[in-house]
Image 1 (cartoon, rainbow, N blue to C red):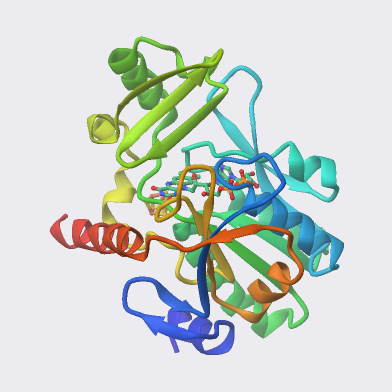
Image 2 (image 1 turned 135 degrees about the vertical axis):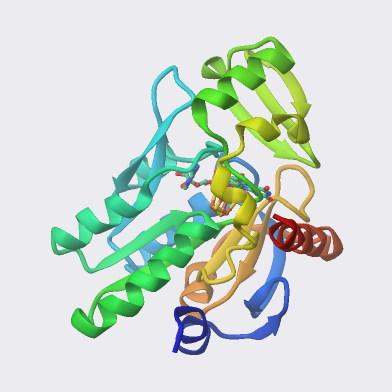
Length: 268
Ligand SMILES: Cc1cc2nc3c(=O)[nH]c(=O)nc-3n(C[C@H](O)[C@H](O)[C@H](O)COP(=O)(O)OP(=O)(O)OC[C@H]3O[C@@H](n4cnc5c(N)ncnc54)[C@H](O)[C@@H]3O)c2cc1C
Ligand code: SF4
């Protein structure tokens, strides 16, 4: 059985939508935590740690004064809180996961992109044969594309006149790439950053991290909210009792992006 079917059958639950994947719930939410959108990923990580669902989480920390980031292991509230926000780059979370597994850790959460969720599911399929008690919780982030750091820096400088290394926050919303520096927002069209996109992204058709335990993004939500797709019992447990304000997701907008990403793959 291939890892997609195996994951869907063994680990996920709910109805299967051709574009959105297997899911039992879809909603938009805002937590009490500061985050990229509604701070839901941060809230889920804190919830998992508190409920003892995992004892370490692989997150991403930005490097000081650079638009670069590295994967790190968070085992405390403070480490999770300082990792909030999005860096629109592919960061090597998988080698950090291997390191943790090699060190003997068995219950690990990973926040990662759809391509990385797939890689972890493949790894899990193999791991299960040898190490039955490894439990990996996957929080998938929606992703249309990631950027090559040095190319992104050059393109953002050319299109907006600012140095992305100085950004306090970057955001992608409705086709616009925003860079916040000292309270001012500079922007350009995401389509104008085409030359900075990671080559492999053009062959990737999974927008909504369809094999994760729970997927989170901004598409389909009002500004300041995260879109949440619950896909497994573990995802449900993370959400249980979580203090978030919920609103309805604009499902059509979300499905349009899922379809667009699939269609782009077929063309290339
Ligand atoms: C490359 C990339 C492209 C994206 N594209 C889209 C998109 O097209 N549409 C959309 O709706 N959403 C996209 N997202 C997701 C979105 O930007 C937010 O991450 C998501 O909405 C969660 O917001 P939050 O406030 O709940 O998260 P927060 O509470 O702020 O937590 C974010 C978590 O993500 C981790 N993280 C940050 N950057 C990375 C990274 N590069 N790799 C792995 N983990 C990371 C942080 O360590 C933190 O734990 C993208 C994310 C990335 C990394
Ligand atoms: S577009 Fe696909 S391959 Fe590129 S970073 Fe996102 S999930 Fe990975």
